[in-house]
Image (cartoon, rainbow, N blue to C red):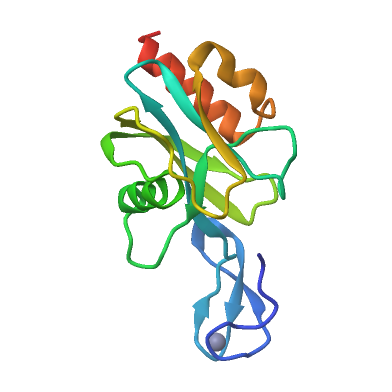
Length: 166
Ligand SMILES: [Zn+2]
């Protein structure tokens, strides 16, 4: 999101040349640049030792496709802590191993998703009330259930490849 007014003092923003950045939004009252804002979230492919992945259904987002665990980070929280927290909240699972898989800018530019592959013990899924369903899905059946090309799809594909050692 590009600001029109300074979020610190409310002054209407101008622009100013700033080194390699070129023209940037600038507050003349605060004497500082005001960068475009975006939200940081985590997304996690949750897998078990039996080559299955936990996929979630949220019918308010899509009736037919599945998604991965995701959530907005809180201030002062590490991305790793956010991933562990969201997996606990959404599925009731404890993380054994967590690996950072890369970052995924959302296409509208308002969000950056930090992707993880999380390994857990296989256990029944204890769903949060935000979810309409979740299930353990074998690796070879997972990708067709997720919207092709989506962040969840790319993260799942990369996480399965990592686990298979390819
Ligand atoms: Zn200002």
